[in-house]
Amino acid sequence: MDWLDTPLAPALAGLLGGVLLGLAARRGRFCTLGAIEDALYGQDWNRLRMWALALSLAIGATFLLDFIGLIDREASLYSRLEWNPVSAILGGLTFGYGMAIAGNCGYGALARLGGGDLRSLVIVVVMGIAAYAVISGPLAGLRLSVFPVTPGDTGVATGYADLIASGVSVAPLAPALALSAGLAALAFWERDFRRSPGLILWSGVAAIAIVSGWLATTLISRESFDVVGVESHSFTAPVGETMLYAMTSSAGGLSFGVGSVLGVILGAFIGSISLGQFRWEACDDAGELGRQILGGALMGIGGILALGCSVGQGLTAFSTLAYSAPVVLASIAVGAVLGLRQLVRGFAPG
Figure 1 (tube, rainbow, N blue to C red):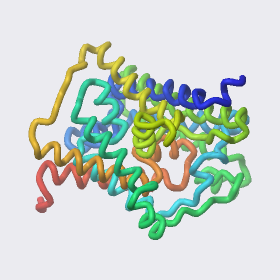
Figure 2 (figure 1 turned 135 degrees about the horizontal axis):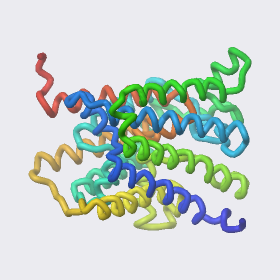
Figure 3 (figure 1 turned 60 degrees about the vertical axis):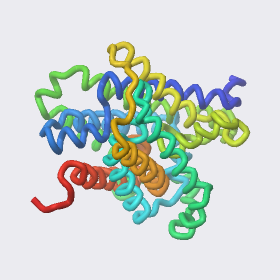
């Protein structure tokens, strides 16, 4: 087990889960913005049902494995830091609006990049730079002065399941499984979804990727005596972290996040090749390029303020039922709707 003490272990864990997410994006069309667009303009709720099913499976598996001691929710970022509702809402709105303007979230951009879309490379690079400008660059001081980072209660898993469990004297597993069942029922309510094995399969693959991240990093953290943190997939700060690793490993070495980013690109490449859909694409005009630069910058800033992106908060944090997750996810959805509305018909009434 000595190899678990090396930086390669979390990177490989992230890579494997990232490949699954990349395949889910390309082969299963698992996409946050796409799901919102389908429901908003096509009255097609299937991809939102995919999201509900992925959440159901991720929540149920995460809490079950936490209950038997294989996952340590108490060690996650969402337990170690107090969440700020204002920062979460503002960050979510900013991220969602940027996602709509750019045409993809960070995860979606990485998946499209794996399919040969060079437009997404612009989004990824700008998003990574903006994220690190807010984390440790010229905007870091402003961020910390407006939204100071406050440590949470050490060793205490905080979230909706814990809150409900403490009130009715049950294990957090019980309310988590109840919510998991409710989300699954919501997903399977529509007959078309029940008759679509591909949608069900790729929802499960996305959930497996999230849970595998928690499971692998918990094991590695224990073997490395907490040198490696417990985490799962997110695509805001890790994009910038991957860029730093590519430029100089001394500034940012191998990590779960770096492996995750590279894994999504690799999985999307495999998926696009297997479908015969790989092709090089570039921007059509300067206006499109400008929107992608602006959207990437807004996502980088918003994702850091919200402590996660549509995947980082919408799946990873949500799988632990962290207080921030539904707030950020709802804010991202609202921001995306506003951005899509502006792109389609402007802000004029009617």
